[in-house]
Image (cartoon, rainbow, N blue to C red; front, side, top):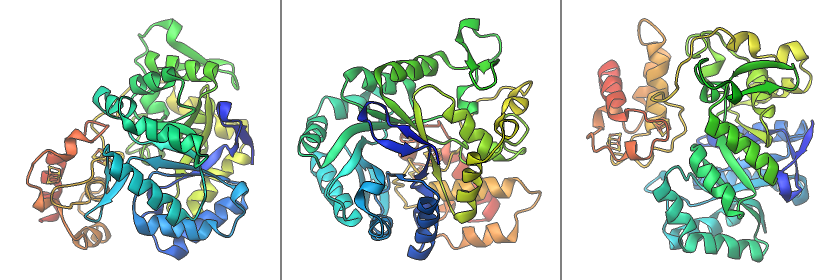
Length: 383
Ligand code: SF4
Ligand code: SF4
């Protein structure tokens, strides 16, 4: 495993790390197999945005097998668990309660990076940075209960604002080639060169480019989420480049952006850990993503579900991310596969229960028309 320095924190982290999303809803044994396999192969870094109490407790119990100094935790402030669902909160009492819950369930005396969770709009930014929440984060840092303050966002503008405060040492940001691409007609100055291959690839969004450079200059580390774009880049059918990228190529793309310290990969099983670990032994040819990207039509991922779950909570307790996942799986086939239908049928709340209140859409960072998706799923799965 290659380790990178997490910017000005000075902490050494494995360049491939564990994202928490797919540990949720898994049994203790499955969580343990994934985390143990990752740790046995040198991964020492884990992001836990999750507020799910079972998942937090499982991870805490598993991490007890390792000395505290041997792993690094990105743990999120401002996530809460209400009525059996994840949600964001900017209520200081709730922020405090769920931070204590995180510490208790993880059974740790400190969190390496206390991440201010999911700040995608100016309103969101103000509700954290111009409120008692940032003071609380600073207090936790002064007490040593968190060692650095970080922030997670999908919006380069908000990432930039946070970086400029001087308070933030780590930004968890969504990066993959699909998000970064611009049409070829864009300003030549915005093109970037990949030092590994010494050739020009595609244009990168200027705001993103400036963000990566600024973070690099300031010693602010970027940790990456959505490196596979929710799995879409791994399939020719769903990739906007009309060819599949491999996990190795996606990881390499992220690790070759300035300021990136680690890619947080959501592992659903041990095989997916192995697929990411292949990066460590991959040849330059295997890492090279240029053949896939070059000449491919440019698309935006805006409007496509990434299964991130940020739209929760749903008024009717629908697991929107899962419904969208089953819907997309079904739509890849000419008729709905039985396995997908069976999984959908077992959901406690299905798309047919959607009352079109629109609450979820305010929370979706990817502009997904969730109400339309629920209608589509209800019609396809008949409830
Ligand atoms: S609808 Fe939006 S917020 Fe919800 S899972 Fe999909 S991308 Fe994430
Ligand atoms: S619009 Fe539908 S899916 Fe979204 S929160 Fe309301 S009931 Fe839930």
